[in-house]
Length: 424
Ligand SMILES: Cc1cc2nc3c(=O)[nH]c(=O)nc-3n(C[C@H](O)[C@H](O)[C@H](O)COP(=O)(O)O)c2cc1C
Image 1 (cartoon, rainbow, N blue to C red):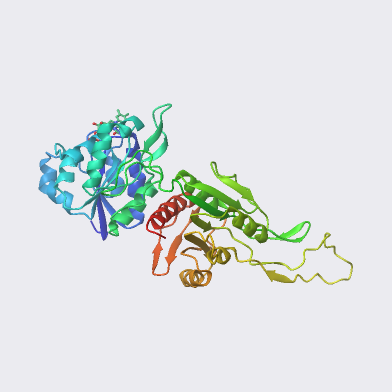
Image 2 (tube, helix red, strand yellow):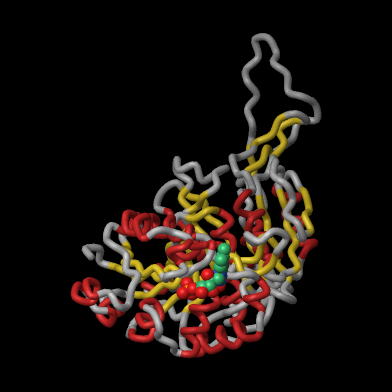
C-alpha cells in the first residue's frame, strides 16, 4: 500500500455494511489506504467486488485460502497496518473479540494483531442493550479497544428506535484520524453507551447531565431607523447545532438567538433578541452557567443614534452620515465577571485571514478559555452547512477536518464536557 497511513477495515455482516463503501472513499480522500476483510455474513450485504474496486486492491474473505496465505498470511495482514477498524462491528464480532475466538479470517486477524483496534458497533437496540453485549463491551473497553458510536435513532427494522445505528462515515473517519494521531480515546458520539478504554459502560450516559449551558447564536441587527438595520451573514446554524448537541448531551440549555430564519432547537430554552445590547442583557439574565459558548456574530458597532422616523431622501440633500459607536463586548464582559463567571467560557472567531494568529490574540484579549476559530473568507461557511475549525487554547491549537456543522457541534460538546470534567 502506497499511502503513508493505512488501516485494515473489517466489514461485518450488518445492514450498515453499505456505509463502509463511503468510508473507504473518504479514507482515500484523506490519504489513508484501506485493506479490507469481509466476513462471510458481510458478503451478504456488500460484494467483495465493490469493496475491492473502491479500496483499489482485492479484499480478503477466507482464512483457509491458499492463494491469500501465499500472498500475505493472516498474521502479516493483521500487522502490516496502522490500525484495525471493525465497521459494522456486529454483536457476533464483538462477542468473538471479547472472548478471544478466532474461527474465521476477521476474528483471527483481530486476535493476532499487535495494532490498536477501533470498532463502530451496529445492531438492533435490543441486541446492543442485552446484558451479554454490555458484558462484552465492558471487556473490550478494558482491553483498550476504541469505540465510536453507536448513534440513537430509527433502525432498519420497522418501528424500532434506540441506540444501535452505526456512526456515520464522517464520524468514523474522524475517530480513525484521532486514533492514528495516537489519541487514547476517540470523541464519543453523543448518546452512545460505551465510552473510553477503561471507562465505565453505562446505559444512556449523558456527559453534560446536571450542567447548565448558555449559548449565543445568529447575527445581531443594529437599528438605523425603524425600518433599516446593520446586520451580517450569520445564519445561526452552528450555534443552534451546538445548543441541540448540548441538550442531547443532557445539559439544561439556554440559547440566546439573534434574528435567524431557522427553527428553535428542540429541548432548549430559546430567548430571541435583536441587538447586541439586548443579547448582553439576555445573557446576563441567563447566568449562572457551567459553560458559556458565544457563537453569535455580534455587530461590533451600532449607529450612535437610531432615527425616530424613517430616514427620507431629500431632493438635493446629501446622504445621511451614520455615526457609529462600539457595542458592548459580550464575550469579554462575561469572561471578566468576578461573580458567577462561568467556569468554561468559549468564544468564536470568524476571520478571513491569519485565522489562528487572530484567534490567539482574541483568546488573550477577551480572557476566555477557548476560541473556536473558523475561516469565513469566501468559503461559504456563513450560511453554509460545513465548517473547518481550529480549537485554540493558551497552549495548544487543534485543527479539525472540514465537517458538517452538526458534527462540529457534537465533537465540540464532547470536547467541552471533557474540559469541564478536567476542571476547565
Ligand atoms: C438482514 C440482516 C441484518 C442484520 N444486521 C445485523 C446488524 O446490524 N448487527 C448485527 O450485529 N447483526 C446483524 N445481523 C446478524 C449477523 O449477520 C449475524 O450475527 C452474523 O453471524 C454476523 O457475522 P459476522 O459477525 O461474522 O459478520 C443481521 C442479519 C440479517 C439477516
